[in-house]
Image (tube, rainbow, N blue to C red; front, side, top):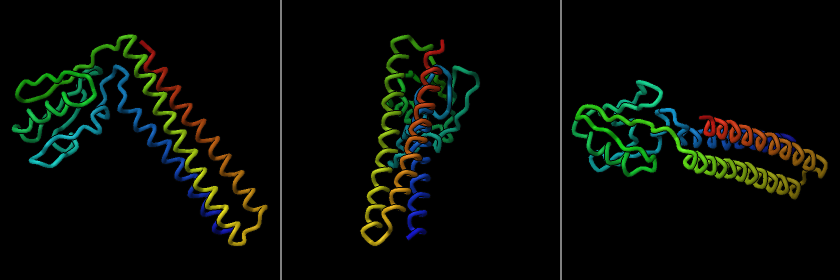
Length: 187
């Protein structure tokens, strides 16, 4: 039984770590006025009838802090890439010169910053909910072990450890939310 308890504790820690990493990845999609290729993650392009990530149909780089340049691997794709960017929720107008697509990051207005901070807080809350759901699932698995004969004391100790992990990872989510908020509000 002790081995199974340890396995659940390891799983809880690993899943909570993944939840925090997911939240961090979501934050890379929220732009803070600086150009970042990660902002394009999630944008899909119609590549001969197959929805394909934009990074697989074009080379992406940042020539300066406020510009993202995309060079399609096939010239015929330039229109579809431009359309995918326009249809996305990036809010940036692509500039197509026939060879390259340039995305210029406009400076953020105060109103836009506030909206992005709100979005960051929502993502952070989703991350915390995810961590709490992991705690709930692991605790119910531990209760099943108790029904199968594990001692009440060892289950109590395991639940306390799971709660410690939960508190630890919620603090991590709060820290990354705070960093992203500062990044957004810094002019």
